[in-house]
Image 1 (cartoon, rainbow, N blue to C red):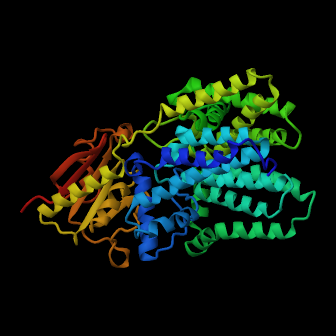
Image 2: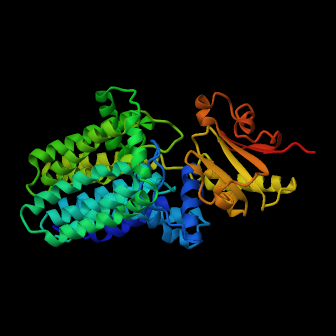
Length: 530
């Protein structure tokens, strides 16, 4: 570390930042996070993994084609899931929240090692109080581990690149591999870490380090290799089919997409979702660009100048890559998780802000530098601390799903349909899975046949030989958010034609219908009496 000593307050900086980060993430974890199909799917996979020994070879499904993220996402969460046998989402989300806290510490360490205690403090404060980073820490989703893994990759790469022990490159490889496993678009981090590695390899031998890095990536992708060899190359075929279909349609021209994506990448950890503060996000983008340009030209050689160029080009690459690889980022759908796809860029953004603040104090005549830096940091704090996520998620979170499952279970029990009977779960629209309801029903001991776009959900009772048993009830989930795609309103019209479409025409009697959360309806169908 280039700054082993600092002012007296520097000793308290890290513990203070970790306490602040924890206080903003850990309270009300049971109710703050969203709960939907993705969360239900992840908990079903984790439960079958830790309780039944079914080792996942693929990660969560992506939003494109039939491609999946990496299985190591589940392996990393499995220790927390195993504490309760997969029966507690709170245990898993607590681990995710602790990873968010740890990311603050790593960002502090990186910024401090580059530009001193002030840079570390500012970077840590910005990430600790970031409403986006806090949101990322409070619910179960595969991109939510990326801020920590990417921060580790970047910090370790800087440690090695700045002349320290070359084995730090192995740590950087681990962080990069985890980022790539947690989200397929995390591959964008590979050249950001890889280019400094190549430059370092040109000036000193890295033979054993190269081998260790190779082993890291072999271990990361071994589950995928096993899957491909045992399942007729299912991922490769899905990827080729997706590419043959033309990929994701792009509704905006490339220059427009690039502007929107660049704004989202840079402003996300500073001001949050762009539709919640477009002007603030635009200002944040301009400030970060100004910091990069200032330190690129006038920074101290081998310190903040090198990192400003590295991270500046890294953010530019991220924006270009995502413009081409993820055209959907040109639009925002309120009510769905947003912007976490590029969480690997968050550490770069906050470290650049820290570098800029430290340079203002160091190079601009007092008190002007202090005032400008103080006002900027205070503005970020004020913006984020007045927009913290509520203690109870607007959709009710997992407790709402628990209550809905309990009501379905009670209605079926009262109708004489015991827990040994098979319950068929269908979704409206069909492209959304039923796992948000399937998981709490499974915990209640219900046998479910939970449909997803990829077949039946993990934990479904598919019967012997994979043949689904006859179901005794039909539970239909309807999400009003997709009313346009459905073509009818939830709460009756949209659900009425599902039994016939599902081949369950016998289920003509509505046993119960209720709104489990705002816009999310549950209808329980049973056969007509007699």
